[in-house]
Length: 350
Ligand code: BGC
Image (cartoon, rainbow, N blue to C red; front, top):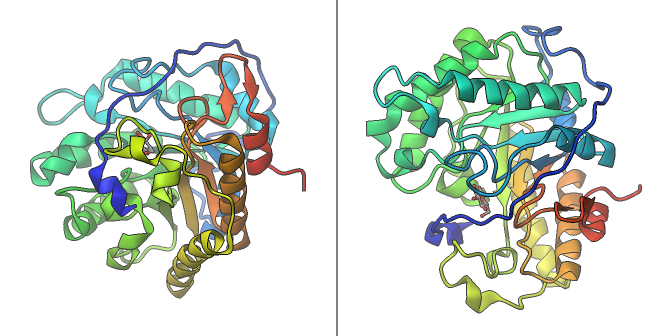
C-alpha cells in the first residue's frame, strides 16, 4: 500500500446502463431491529462476501465517472451470491460551503434510495465518507465539516437496522497522518455514538488504509462494536498495472501473478500479521477493498482474486471486492453479465 502514496486520483470509467427488477428481502426490515445490541463478530459474518459499488456516488457527481446506480444492480449482486455491498460516497461535494455544512436534500434522498435498495435486496450495506480530498491536504481546516457530515448521516439513519454499517473515512493519507487520524476518529465515533449507540462502525488505518499502519491505529475506548478494515492491493505493480492514476504504472504492464510459493507467502504473511493484530485486540477484520485492474491478464486476476479471497476467509475476514462494473469490475456492463472467471474466483461453488 505504500505505493499508494504516489497515487494521483483521476477518473476512469465507462458508461453503463441496464434494466432492473424487484427481489425479496433476505434481511429484516430496515427499521425493525434498530437500537438492539449486536455481536460484532456476527455482524462481520453478515458482511461476508461483498462487492463495492464503486465509481458512482464517490465521483464528484454520480455519473461523472460513467456509473449511475441502477435498481437491478442490487438484485444482480444478491442473486450471484454476495451478501453485502459497500457504497463509497463523496458527501463532501454535496454540502453547503459553510458551517453547518448541510447535506443537500436531493443527495441524501439518493443515498436513502441506494441504502434501501441494498436492504430490500437482502444485502447488508456499508456507507462511508469517500474522496473527501480536502481533508487529506488540510485536516484541521476540514475537521468541522467532517464531523458535521457524520452528525447528519448518523442522525438520518439512526433508526435503520443493524444491517447498515457506517465506515468512518476511506483511506486517510497525506497530511491526515496516523496521529491526527486517531484524534479525528475518536471524535467522529463520539458523534456517531450519540445517535447510534448500537450501530456497527468500521474504521480503517491511515496511510491509505493499508496493513502497514495497523500498529498506529488507536481503537476508540469503551467500544465493542467496531470492525477494522484493511485494503489490499499487493503486489501493487500487479494490481495497479496500467492504472492511469498511479504514476509509472505503464511500466508494470504485463506483470503476472502465477501463484508461486513466494507470491503466496507474501499474502499469507500480511494476513497472518493482520490476524495476530486483530486477535490480540478482539476485533473482526473486513477487507473492504481488494482487486486487480482490467489491464492485468484475466488468468492472473482470477488466480490472485481467488487466492486473496480464500486466504481472507480462512482467517475469518469478511471482504468486498473492488469493484462491481468499472475498471476493476467483476461485472461486464456492456454485455450485462459477470466476468465468469472473476465471479468464480470470488464465489466458488463450494
Ligand atoms: C479509490 C479508487 C481506486 C481504488 C484502487 C479506491 O479506494 O477510491 O479511486 O480506483 O482505490 O486504487
